[in-house]
Image 1 (cartoon, rainbow, N blue to C red):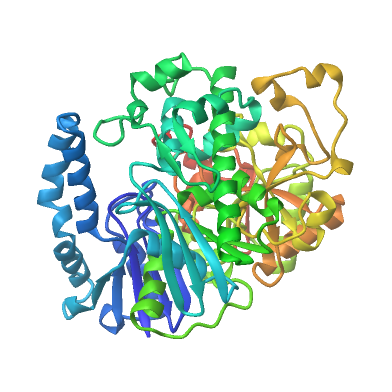
Image 2 (image 1 turned 180 degrees about the vertical axis):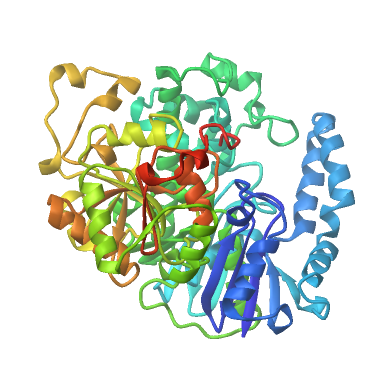
Length: 609
């Protein structure tokens, strides 16, 4: 049985194909169109899923959309009526779009699907609720036969936070918090207030938080959110504008904090860092109260997480260390892209009633579910764009890459199937030596063209993770933050300890300063031989040369660009920034050997995220 899941029309459109209960292909539309967070109908992603499995659309038993448009419209109308006459300008903008397009998404979907196959039977099109899609995306690929599933995001149709119980092939939501009360929207409101882009910049707020102090946490708890001991909450909507306005916050919000909304080009100050630290502290506390309450209420020992808030790896790490659950599994595409996976699984198990066997380890196959290219195809494509490369054996390629990294060169690494979700996990990655004190700053400013304060993740051999970090469990998706071990840290002078804000950035805190954040934390990716054997081999070889089983791993793109998908994307990005070496399959490219006429300027090639 084949079921195609689709998410679209909000942000991060995607498609995923489940075949006999197993995910066989999944990809985001942005990787093909090169438009970050592309919300359009995922024509290219669907085309890839079908091509990867040799299927036609008429071979698909069901196509499932990840939410229910009529319920969203109901929420929109009820909100405007409740808030009237406020929000009339927003109403004027939103309603015509719904009346022209969004209310008729079923017809639109049928039309678009008909472009793949005129014989596609529209009766095969199904819809599932947004939070059920999220919950299904986390539970069904997890290794658990029984688990509680917590979903937290901005908003689906009505739900913003939900809890479900999964057992076998059944999944039932038993608890919800509804719009406009939302942890995701609260965090996005602060993202907007601190000058970052909503639905894109939330992870910047998370990365900025350790530079500040949570001075305003109590202010947030006293005025913005009424957080109960069991984790339930309500927001004071008099401070927000997202229900019916055109911005996330209003003047009352700015007056509460004492400063206006930061513009994107305005210098970040200690105030903004303290606000970031404060909202992170409040989110941590809210998530901990929710998970503790669910553990007590259900007696479950396994927890699954999904929804955009589940990408907050700082909060995830605190839940893991809290110990209320024995094991935690987080959907790597926890945002809306992962809704495509969940929609397909919900139809397979809930609608069709197909039995489920819990995955032995990871039903997402390491998230390596996207396009791949044969060695011959790589060579043909690189030659066509004018690349100059050397073809090595696999052993030689691994050796050459490990040597370049140990020489502290910045390396683009393109291997195997592209990752699904927002993280590069060793298939479409930029790699560096974590021992270099300058690596973090250089990668941010000269390779990624992004803010210098943003931290990088360590990719570490799974068998060595406990020797370097305060963690001894799997974290294959960079979704858990833990501290660097004390014996790997460097003692700081009194002068260094007195620094604050961005001044902390230039202080080496450990033996791996490029991946050690200012609070000694790290967003860890564990690498296992069974899920990514080639990347595991590279880490082993780097360890043999350097004594360090850790590499800097960041996404292969520049700021505002989607992660590269094809060899051509990789070469263009390589020629547009200051990467030193590019490795695509067994092809090794050195920047100094390339045709200078092909050099591009990627520093401002994409809209800033």
